[in-house]
Image (cartoon, rainbow over all chains, first blue to last red; front, side, top):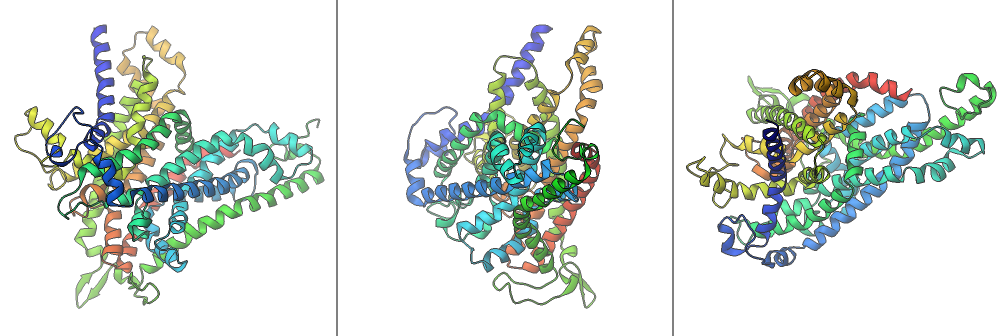
Length: 274
Length: 323
């Protein structure tokens, strides 16, 4: 009985691992196969053909798409963290009238459906002259990242012991100095976690990027991959699409594996305490 | 009165009055200065666009010229021309998308919750390779939605797909299935890919709750020889219920606004179209800003009602925390 239980347990573990990994594994082997090879199914890597990886950069400005994604995600992270940390200090450490209501509103905004602001955002971006530009996407993505960075950083800020700032205030420090000199260094680990989550959100964002860009040179990675077409309209270049998918997924997987514990901490701080 | 605490709520009563209030006032003023930048940006990128979207839903605006429109009241929602009812609320495609979204949310979140609990229980057990497993299940979550939709599109390809090949070899199906095009399987396919992608999120949230449970209860149950199944339903499940509810609500809100997955997996097919896909199609492809905004507004109302209910339910806990 005990042995059966153990076997069942390990079978379950194996099934979960297989289900989690197989699609990515299959994308990797497919990306190394090209031409007529792709019309047969292969379960094990049998060829190592890099032509899809060259094609993805030749057939379209994929390098530019990656750079766009990095610029947008980087700027979004920087702005969200800068605004989020200062706001989180006030929300987490100072009791003022209307604090709970404001926090509730911000939490509510983080649950906004993106499509609910789509036409208004379109008008805003167009009237600012930011249609089909990267700053337009950065502005739009802030709607997705700023509420939850503020929220998660506030929960981290609350956990800091009171004594830390008390000592500084007794020494006559102003709130601004306290934030900069005391909390900024202490919040660094939390900021890394939150920043990473914001980066992933922005890196994966699709609806705004699809709607607010027009030309292939301005697209970020998700719409670039979604709109990839082959030589004819009827035939999708699956090998190239898989190569592109592998290229943009590897760095994210690397980040997630390295920062695994931090990400889990950030997710649970954002969700469980909500 | 020996403690010289910084102004906080707890210490306020014990401190000499004049000094405390002046310090408190400085801090409260600084609080608003700290919050102002974030608030301004939020109003600009969330509040204002939302207000404009709601306004556009009462107009006949067109995407080509957003400055030239007229106010038409509720006509985008419901209008009566010569005894014939028109507008969004009479559009069968809209109701189809509402139904699709609700069905998708209910089915996918239910499956994800059950599987999430199973995976979390496994990861909570002590076994060699547990750390690796935890990293492994994070991979589907980390892959961008568009990319995972494309990967599955390829695996589900009707002629060259690996899923059909596997099922044919195993003798489970007799002929290849067009997973994403067949109305009978399309929505199930979307559910399956969503389950693959978001079960890790559920599992990790549940795992975090499991790890906070006191161990002595389990030792006591073991000593008394209680069956593990009974322990799970009588002890574990009630204890993790609050965390589980929060996770379910978060996932449900996420599922209700689903866009990427369905758009990439099945394009604009009516069989799987979600509310978000419908609204964007009206807005961008048909250039009907008025109608699209009306759909957006209804989506917002549906989700806002759910969020409000959630926040009211969660308020008690939040209040305790801010004390």
